[in-house]
Image (cartoon, rainbow, N blue to C red; front, side, top):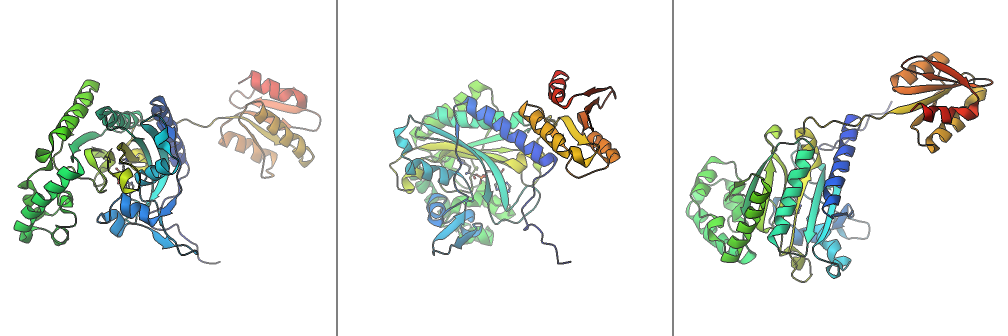
Length: 412
Ligand code: HAM
């Protein structure tokens, strides 16, 4: 026997109950997002590398360390998508969606790829449910996307706390970056090597560090939230007022920075205590400069994404639908296989969930199998007629082959 091949590290097979739970997640995401007028979008699994370099930002961990980038046989540099916002914005431009009523509201449930240290809740291929509203800078868009994610998490039994911040416009942020960078330079000796090396490239990431010295320095650093322009202050206040009206609690977090460079103004993250180290179950924010960075006219946007695996890890008490088998069709003699097969097809056409004997089991084996799959009715095709049996009560009738489907429907 040759050696067995395993799935790559950090990837998962989705099967059994996990597959059922995931279908349920999709079903509920559909219901929540449809109700708010979001339309489904699917973008390709790979894109031009340039899209993420420009969209997500050259100095981010995602672009520097985590992308699966390869050249195809035609010599193009392609990248497996590490996130969904840049691809959706690319699609918005490519399909001229600026002509549609704004904002254009789109949602996705797709797989994403990041080369990360694999552990519970952190994978190299993972799924996100996400939503993007492109074309309006109204604070109601920010509040609505946050509330939709909150509703989705609640629907799926995830208890999570919302942290909320504002990064201001790119101008305000650039001014602030300089002040922060000089504060970090002044205390460079106390910082972790990683943060120290990137003071000029990406000083805001210092707020993400677990390093004790770095944390002490950032605790005394000027805060972006105190350095916002008046327009941004007003925008943030309007978002908070809408969340207050909706009764959604949150903590304002002046140090909330996200790992992607495109954010402006509102940023948010939902953390779930059930998740341990990988506590971020979902997050997002506004990205008013992204479409322009991708070659479009200045166009605001805002959205969220939540990890499907993390939602399912953190979710509790979500009743899962159980598959029912209305009827299992077996036969006593191989001569009757064709009749049994046709009967199962007819039962499905009539709307029943029907399975047919597929493995040439003995009669005893078929009875056991019908029980094991939880069939409600067993149809046993015999020489002249078919015996229809209620599995639970054992009650049995003998019918002509033509009458079986109607009788099964009557008993449903
Ligand atoms: P993100 O924070 O990078 O944002 O990812 C969103 C969520 O995806 C995280 O909160 C987490 O639940 C999940 N996630 C990320 N990486 C992994 C991983 N390696 N394994 C498992 N789950 C993971 C974004 O991707 C933005 N595009 C969100 C957004 C949409 N912003 C605006 N619109």
